[in-house]
Image (spheres, rainbow, N blue to C red):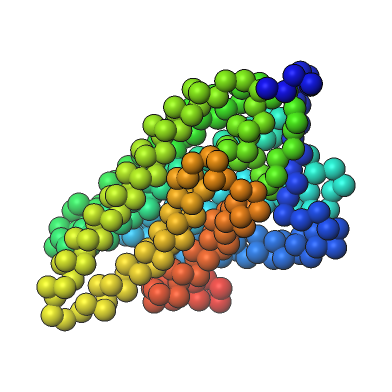
Length: 305
């Protein structure tokens, strides 16, 4: 494909969000504040769930796991982006790109399944409340979390292995702030048919099947709540934060990975990527704490201690 340059690529150049030095300095400070807010908010939520006995239920175990995922997810991309804002050479090594790619993919795919299990947890709590503690006990919750991580790690490792087994002969410029699959495939000078088949198989499994489970759970929840005479608002209030997170996460993920490759465009994709890798992890603890009195009370107690 690139006959003019057959030397192996040892690093990639990340163009980032802007080429203007002044804008880059401004973006550095903005994203630094956002990153620190993300770490602080999610860390406080994890500690609050662990230290408050009222929150030792499946719903909050899932929530603390989501916060840990968000910390890892945003940390896979933001620190390197911050460095590149102030660096004259905005590069990432081949190995660094592979690690960043794999970690971010693991977090994203794990979160897809975790959100599906959280929807099932809400379904059991609202539609089968008398059996909730039996069905969704701590062991079941931890098994679901483990399945999410195991599936995410296996699927992401396979995609990463085949992606970085490709030959990259140049150019090595990525119009993004982190290593992303569609853009990496465009830079490859070898046959990408295998990785395209893997994508064709894995995207429905990791993205659309969990989303279908979420939709089924909420259809049943809505049907059950409509039959309740009293307490409808309370039942829905436990679902609203999760629904908001699902819309944010799946909306951006489907936009990024559910489209044909020829529709992938640089600037739009970068803005969407900022939303689901930087903004959403910051908003998640705020969304859950603002709508939940128990979480707000535990976090206030933690801050005052």
